[in-house]
Image (cartoon, rainbow, N blue to C red; front, side):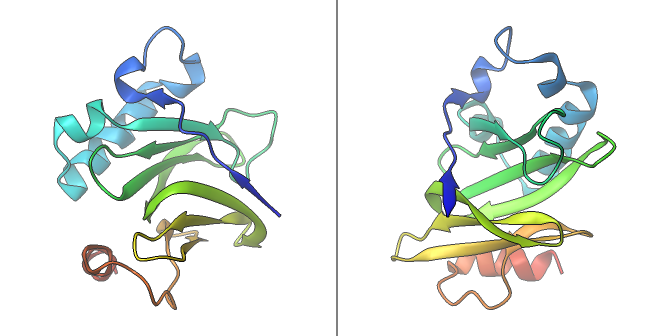
Length: 152
């Protein structure tokens, strides 16, 4: 059984309606870091869609954030550890929908995205690097294969 995530807010709306725990200085620092690390433009962030959810942390704690980067087939994740500490949670490639699987790897659920060529792309959590496409993915787009090899 899996749950489909709803990307129902834009980052440009990241204002008064956003919960205080979703817009801390630590989160903004991580966003700035992944923007620089992966070479995103400001327009990719301004048009990004956002969803919140619990990807393995306590359900009563502050949520994890997933940004769907505008005009690109990438998602960036900010996660919270068991103690509430915020960190970079890795990346996904593919298109909507994004599903949270009931299967878990390293204490966090497997995430599935759709592939433009058909099928799904499986993403597993690695404690050192966060989410990334599974090593045995056969339908990974070329741009994502390059990014994966750069991050090793």
